[in-house]
Image (tube, rainbow, N blue to C red):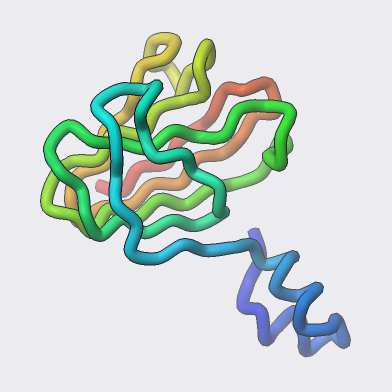
Length: 126
């Protein structure tokens, strides 16, 4: 997993390249939808949700796009309600059923590791 951008730049890598290596972040996002089809599409390596209405969620990227095996996406739920994170359509997170979302409680965070086949591992804070 990448470290601080300044550490990467300290090895002589230019600032823009160091930022790309370290990944992108989105702050103050709003969870959307009430199911897998209408959930907020995760596009950054790190996403903070500050507005989470009841029964809203986010969906992980599908295979074949920017996400490769071993990539990790971080999700932070700073909203008032539990955030549901869904796998791409037709896939699953850990041992959950295909297309089933996992819950990230208010004030908690989760890491989702891409397997490269559309399925994800998860590490959800206690």
